[in-house]
Amino acid sequence: MVTNQRITAEELDFKQVVDHSLNAKLIIDGTNVLYVNNACLDMLKVDEEMLIANGYKSYFHPDYQEKYENSVARALEGKRVELMEQKMIRSDGSLIDVEVVCAPFYNKGTTLVQVIIRDITERKENEKLLLQSEKLSMIGEVAAGIVHEIRNPLTTIKGFLQLIESKDKSDQKYIQIMKSEVTRIEKIANDLLKYSKPKVESFKVENIVEVVQDVLFMWETEAFKRKITMEFAATESNIPILSEKTQITQVFINLIKNAMEAVDNQGEGEITIEIHKSAAHVFIKIRDNGYGIPKEMLDKLGTSFHTTKEDGTGLGLMVTYNIIKNHNGTVIVDSQLGEGTTFTIVLPIEYENRKMESSF
Image 1 (cartoon, one colour):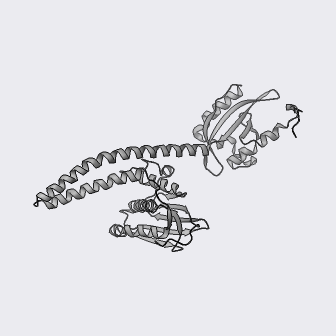
Image 2 (cartoon, helix red, strand yellow; image 1 turned 135 degrees about the vertical axis):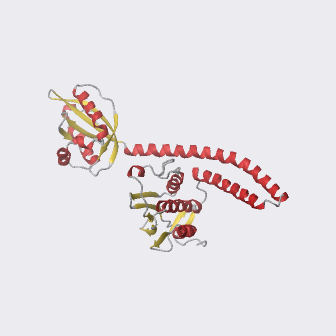
Image 3 (tube, helix red, strand yellow; image 1 turned 90 degrees about the vertical axis):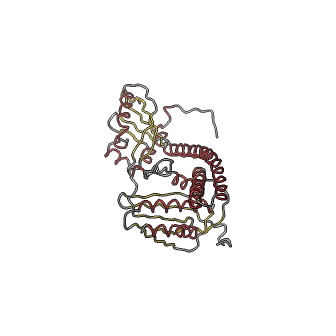
């Protein structure tokens, strides 16, 4: 029931209000923590005793501590401080993006500082996804233009080669080489268009075990030439997923190719592919014993023009991540320098049609 009776500020228990605030809040005297609310402890994954014992400043990323301390000093002088974006370190070592504002807090004639912190990690991740989406769109438009411009002169060249082939029988060997190279250029152009702007066309129930086995069969000869051992194991022979077969095949072509390049020239290259499932998901692990990926590169995987290869563009992994995202899946990467890399593809199992289509 709503009444017209107003509650004065003196009658309110503001500690309860702050305790249950969604924003993390600290009250400090510049050095010591005088108060911390539950939201702050939850955000940093600590208890109050640990926060005080470690010193609250240790949870601010070293790159931002000087900027933060300047803000605290201004607030102690009673000055207004602008909102800052910073990074903080949780007790488990993970980084989070935060917005921080410091404001003067007057208590019994003493100026303290109220530090208000908002976790914006999810917002930052969404901004990255939006930026990546815009990159994909831009690359797709550029690729379409490039392919269009390449196809026109290629058609002319192929036409003249066919004309020369029909009239001049003396240099058939060279003509065949030129035709082969023109065909290769056409394939590269088409791949560029496909890599830059993958499209979901027709989703059907597919057996992911068979898809992966088909890709391994494609790479079998190349692996033998490079003296690379490939081992495959699956807990079941039939695991259904809803997918666009051409796209999901391209994912494993890209990942196996990357794994082979990672172990190439090592003498004893090994690639292991394992498939198992839980109640709702299938997990496809592709592990190599190559040179590994530097830690600073892991977060950039799947973005264009970030690659560990000298002549790479990163487009293959970018397409891989995009296809898996379109299939409501995730990509997990674990890598140790000098030991190798494991890519784990997680995809939802299709339960609507447990009876696989007759094409299996």
